[in-house]
Length: 95
Image (cartoon, rainbow, N blue to C red; front, side, top):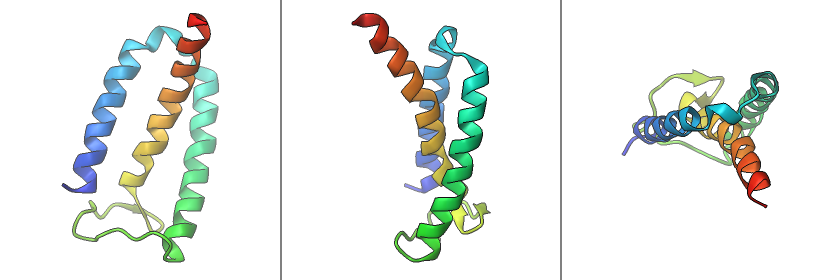
C-alpha cells in the first residue's frame, strides 16, 4: 500500500465525517488553526525528515513534497484539525 492510497483513504473518511459534523463547526477558528498547524507540520516534518529521524520509501510516496516532507504527511494534520474540535464538542454535550 502506498502512502498516497493510505492518505486518500484517511482524507475520504475525514471528508465524510466533516460533512456529518458540519453543524458543529465554527469556521473562523478552524481556518486559523489550520494555518498554524499546517505551518508547524511543514517546519517540524522537514526537520525530522531532513535529519534522518524519519525516512519514507521513495517507491511509496507520490513525489510531491513541501521541502523534504511528502505531501501525504499533511493528511494526518488535516485529520486532527477536523477530528479534535468535533470530538470535543460531541463529548462536551454528552456529559
